[in-house]
Image (cartoon, rainbow, N blue to C red; front, side):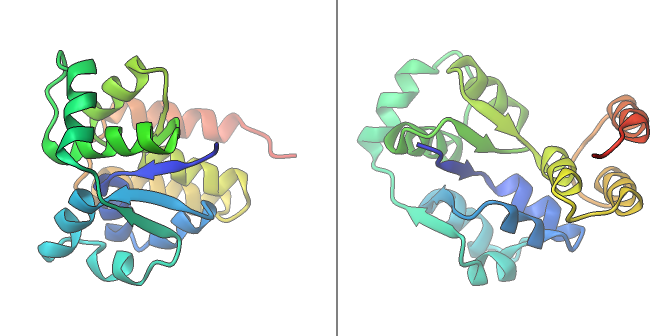
Length: 169
C-alpha cells in the first residue's frame, strides 16, 4: 500500500511559507485526530489550509493501538500525537511519514519506514516541476529564515550546493 501519513510539522512550516499547496503533490494523505486537533484547536499556521484540504483524511486512533506501538518504540521519547501517527501508519500498513520532528523520524526509520520533511517536499516539488530552480532556492532559504523549523546552516548550504549542481532532464 502507498499510504502516506503526515505530521503537523510540514503542514505548519509549509503554511508559514505560503507553500501549503505543495501538499497537493500527494493525492491522499492521512493523519491522526490528535495531530488534526493539535493544528486546528489552536490558531497555528496551517489551520485554515488544513481545514479546507481535500486530500487529508483524518483517522481516530485508539489508546489500545497507541499502546501497541508504544511497546515497540519505548526507547524513543515520543509524545501522544507522535504515537498516534505511528499507530496509524501500522494500521494502514503505510511506510512513509511526512514529519519535521527529529525524534519521530528516528523512530519511524528504526521501524524501516521512510520519512520526508518540509525540505524534502520542497525538493520533490522542484523535481516534479512545481517550482523553478530559483523558487526552490528561495523556498529553502525561507524555510531556514522564516519558518519555525530549525535547519542547520550547514544542511541548508549543502542542499543549495547540490541543487545548483543538479541538471534536470
